[in-house]
Amino acid sequence: MSHPRYTEEFKIEAVKQVVERGHRVAEVAERLGVSGHSLYNWIKRYDKPVEQRQEDDDLQAENRRLKAELKRVLEERDILKKQEKRLVGHIEFYAWFGDHTYEIGWIVNPKYQKQGIAYEAASCVLNHGFTKLGLHRVVATAQPENPASYLLMEKLGMVREGYFRQCIPKGEGVWWDEYFYSMLDSDYRDS
Image (tube, rainbow, N blue to C red; front, side, top):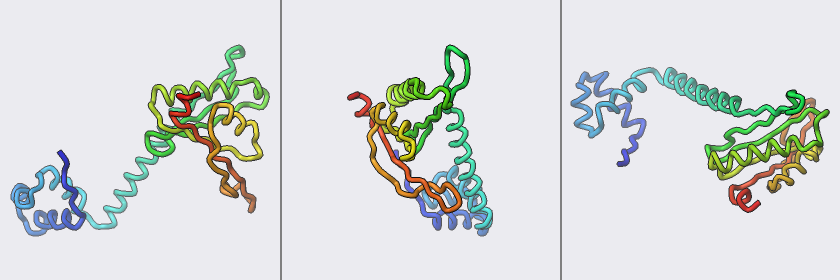
C-alpha cells in the first residue's frame, strides 16, 4: 500500500491547526485524512523555527555521513604477508554510489610489490562483492603515473571508462590526472 506524499506547506498548515488554533490531533488527522502518528511526527518537526529545522536537517545529514564513513572504515581489509605475519598493505572496499556500486583500492609496501599480493587480495574482494554482496558494479581509479595500479585493474578484468584531466589537487597549483575503471557483475561472471 503506497502512502500519499504531502507537501511541506500541507504539513505546516496541519501543525498550525493543532499548535496555534488549539484543535485536537485526532480531529485534525481525521479531517485531513492522515494518521495521528504522521501528524505527531509533523508536530515534532514543524513546531520549531525554520533555523532549528535546518540545524536538525544538517545534524541528520552529518549523522548519515558519519555512519557511511564508519561503514567504509569497517570494510577496509588489511593485507597480511602470511609467511612473515607482517602487515604489508591494505585494501579498501566501500559503497561508492548506493548499495549496488562499490569502490576498490589498494596499497602495498614497496618492499612487497610485484609479488601478486595486490592481485590476490583484490581478486578475493571482487569475488566477495559480486558473489556475496550481489553488487552490480565495482569502480577503481589510478593516476597515469602509476602503471602498476592501472595495469593490475586491467589484469583483474576491469575496463577503463574514462580519463579525467587535472581532477585531483596535489597542492601548490599542481593537479593530477586520473584514470577511471569499472567492472560489472556481467564482466565478472564472464571472466
